[in-house]
Amino acid sequence: MSTLSLAPPPLWRQVLPYGVLLALALLIYFYFPDQLPLAARIAALAIFVMSLDLVVGYGGLATLGHSALYGVGAYAAGLLAMHLSANPLLGLLVGACAGAVLAGLSGLFLLRYEGLTFLMLTIAISQIAQNLASKLRHWTGGDDGLSGFKVDKILGLASFDLQGRVAFIYCFVVMFISLWLMRRLMASPFGLACQGIHQNRQRMAALGTQIRWQLLKLYILSGVFAGISGALAAQVAQIVGLDTLGFELSAEALVMLVLGGAGNLWGALVGTVIFASIHHWASTLNPYHWLFIIGGMLVLMVLLREQLGRALSARLQALQRVLRSKPVGTSA
Amino acid sequence: MSVPLLETRQLRKSFGGLHVTRDVNLSLCAGDKVGLIGPNGAGKTTLINLITGVLAPSAGSVHLGGEDVSRLSQAQRVKRGLVRTFQITQLAPTLPVRRQVEMAIHEREGSIGRLWRPLHAYPQVQDEAQSILQSLRMAGLAARAPIELAYGEQRLVEVALAMALRPRVLLLDEPMAGVPAGERQVVLDALASLPSDLAILMIEHDMDLVFNFADRMLVLAEGAVLAEGSPAEIRRHAAVRAAYLGEEA
Image 1 (tube, rainbow over the protein chains, first blue to last red):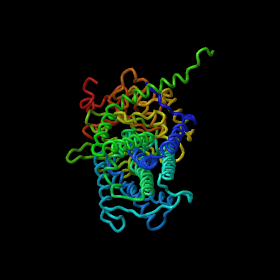
Image 2: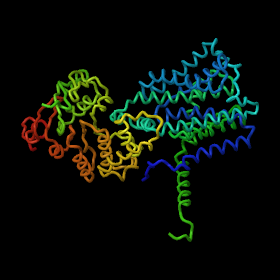
Image 3: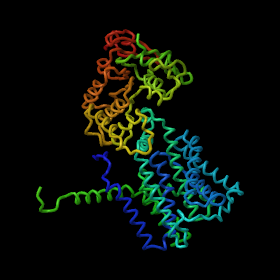
Image 4: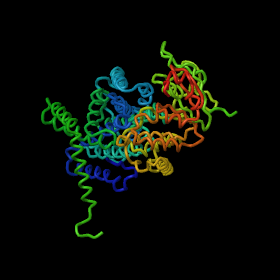
């Protein structure tokens, strides 16, 4: 029988994962310079998958239309850079607002429904968004996408370079801050309420929780980060295509979340890194049949995750016991 | 005469041609302990659902402290002090027990939607949650998830959640349902420790329990009130004996 932790973990345990993340980023930066553009894309995508985790892992809302929030952020940042301001941070802000507004408007309608109905309607929203983007050629470039915009220096200090160094640092810092922010927000009473709603709506209603309102807040919050992710990807790639609003991106993000494990945000990050890395490796290895590798990996993960999780947990517990035990020969 | 804390007036619910609640009038004042009994299908849980706002009545009204709350949502009624427990335990299965009690306190205090301060930055909420659990002799279970608890203990968590909301009216829907014999005393002790000024409406099939607990009884049959009175009067009531308790009772 397990006992769950109620006290906040000691500071070093709170900081350690972020330290490891930073160390990995430095490792990639200095030892894998060829992979920096890929790493930058992964960092931007990780924000999107984490934003999906808010909705799926914390709120218990299965969605396949999350890309609409990402895409609208991407288009908003692209249009801003093209017509008004090339300030990248302003672009992120506008992307966040665009994601939040679409999440708020669509959430008002979507959150009246649950389960499969909700899932289907989220797909419909992303299809509508994609079709609108396709038809509004004058604004969005239609099927050709939005391109030809430039982004100013980040904080007036550095422009995007061909090696992708600045893009990587920029994406990593935004991802790092987003991760910290999301984890902080979900450690609040609001985060607890979302978990409660996920686990038992009837109980939460009996506690007096205004379920739809809390879920709408969560959905808007998720829209903010999905929008930031889309804006970031648009600024780095300097092109926005219709695929940013497509069903495929939503489905892939869900696969990444399943791979890493939903409900704690770190899993979303791990899942994104695994999926995107294998995707890159497999498509390099075999450009025609890489999906077989991804599919096979997913089947294995779903089938073996419980066993892998148990084995990993046992190893960690054994390590903890070793660390806690006194050195041989010491007295009490 | 004081205004009843809970009152239903001519409360009716029909699903098409099926009338499951028929013009039910009941009233509870502070400190009242009312037992609601009736055979299966008598409409007891439907009545609770109508009072709490889970179901909308076809006719009639529900009043809390004199205010007509018939059109208010379940959440708004909880805010006004109307709290229920469930016939089948309803808990978040993997959230630690104390977190769930904290959640109820945050809900009561209106801080449930706060985004920035982490949970551990509310020490007064944590202390109150712990003291509620202590009062139910559940302090040792604070960090455990309901999924790991015995059914009787899960029942106690429901009582703890209700207490955390500081209700004025508490609706207990079969608190002993499914509780094994060995765990009954714990639940009974918890019920005995509820505040004396609380108005309680208890549905229960365990006749010994409900007759001992309640100071007034209401018998429901086919959605309508068949009889009302003290436990002794209900025991003697001919129609109740015939319709529900059986001649041997």
